[in-house]
Structure formats: structure tokens, C-alpha cells
Image (cartoon, rainbow, N blue to C red):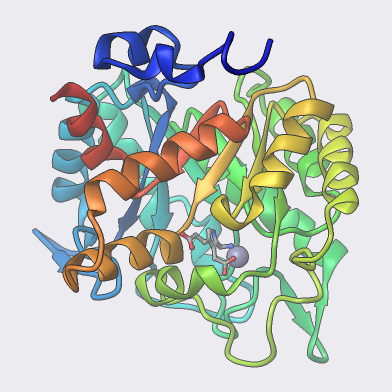
Length: 324
Ligand code: PBG
Ligand code: ZN
């Protein structure tokens, strides 16, 4: 049917009509809020490149998680900033590490909130790489055991889900095995499967003090021009036992989200990363665009592309906007 018999504008004439034919609707249940945990008492350090985001000590983490949960946000993902770092990332897998302590306290106060932990070594290694360094090369297989120990320590502290973000080959299988051997077979793994070597992580590395001290992450994170390879990464993680497949970043990789949603029969998560957040906040502060509308349009686009879950620093703002 063509014009003038068919007129697409007929169904756009009022807000109510538009709502009736809307194909994609954001829901607070889609959101996961990332939080940065630091030691200390009553610490709330603003992250300059991420307005509205903070490094939080435990009581403030609980308060922030509490307000997110009361807005209906079902989950948070925790990143730790340790006091000390070493070559082996030891503080990542200590029983009383920052994430382990934070998980325990948050779960004590908010037992129904889903607490996910990011599993990686880069915040904990003095060289800032996501794996063990051997003669300036990242040693894949030597890293696997440390990642699995980290994941296990998070789960022993009470984490509901672990999310490996290191991009070492074989880490999902290693973590799955170790969790199962220790009686944690019900705990799901959300794999950062298609994680690209992206400049959009800039603000996060400032927030988490995790920038590599030499070189870059090109030998383990994916090359941005590649899409077919993302399918292979996702399929491997499914085979290794992942429960949720993540694409990261989100906005510059909507095609990857779409393709993975088509190919993989597991929930797909997308990480709306720090640089995506910072760009919107910066332009809004300059008065160059309507930050609220751009936020909702962006999150809707990520969902329209096929994401079932969205990890986003906008979670609280978006949840409030959806209530209004
Ligand atoms: C650590 C990690 C990073 C992010 C999540 N986990 C940074 C990196 O890989 O350098 C990025 C998150 C963001 O930019 O919001 N492996
Ligand atoms: Zn890392």
C-alpha cells in the first residue's frame, strides 16, 4: 500500500496513538548500575569526567544501591579500587579485599538486590594490565587461575553473579569449573564476550585507576573493525558456560548487539560505557543538547538493537525519568 492510500502519519497524530504502536519500551528492569568501591569511612569522591558518579566507601555504596533498588533497578555491578597493587593483582582475590567486603555489606542490607561483580585484574595490578605480565607480554594461561580465584572469592563473599571483563581466552570455562567445584553451580556468569579495545573507556580508567602503565590492551581486547569475530567470541563463551553474553561498548557497536541477539539464544547485555556517559554529560553542561532526551534516546536505541540488559551510569536518572 502506497501513498495516498497509506499515510504513516495517521498513527503519529497524538501521544496516545504513538504509545499504542511503540515497538521498544525501556523498563527499569533492564538496568544495571555500575558502582565504584573504595576503602575508608564516609568517602564520596566525585569522578570529574563522570558527573554524578562517585568513588564510594561501603556505607555510601549501600545508600546508593538502596536508592537504586527502591527506584526498581534490580542489579548493581561493583568495581573495586584497592589501596595497594602488585604484579600479580593479589588484592583482587583476597578474602577481605574491597569488593569482597562491599559485596558482604551490601547483601547484608539489601538481600534482594542482585549484586554482580566485575572480575578482572587491571585495577589490582601495578602495571594496569588485565592479566599477568611475562616479559611485557600478557600471559593468558597463567592469568586464568587468578581470575577464577577472584570470581570464587566474590561469590564466597555473597556475589549473585560474576562478570569477567579481562578478555583472556578460556576464562569462562575456568571460572565455571572452579565455581562448580566449590558448590556454586547456581551462580550465573555474565561474560564480557565482545569487549572491544575502545577509547570510550577513558573516564572509567580515571575513575578506577586502571589504565595500563605500558602499552595498551590491543593484544587481548577485540579490534574495533571486527564483527564476525564477535560472534565467534560469543559462541565460545556460550560453549564454556556463560549465562549472559555482553557487548561493550554499546553505542558505537549497535550492529554487534543486533548480530549477537540474532545468533545467540541467551540474554544479551550491552555496556553503555563511561565515555558514552561523559559525552552526553559534557554536551549537556555546555548547553549543547538536551541531556535527558539524549539519554533516553540512546538507551532506547541500545534496547532496540537487541539488548535485554543495559549496564549504564544513567540507570538512576533513567529510572527516575521513566517514573515521571
Ligand atoms: C576492566 C574494565 C573496563 C571497563 C569495565 N571493566 C576498562 C578497561 O577494559 O580498560 C570499562 C567500563 C567503562 O568504560 O564504563 N577490565
Ligand atoms: Zn581489566
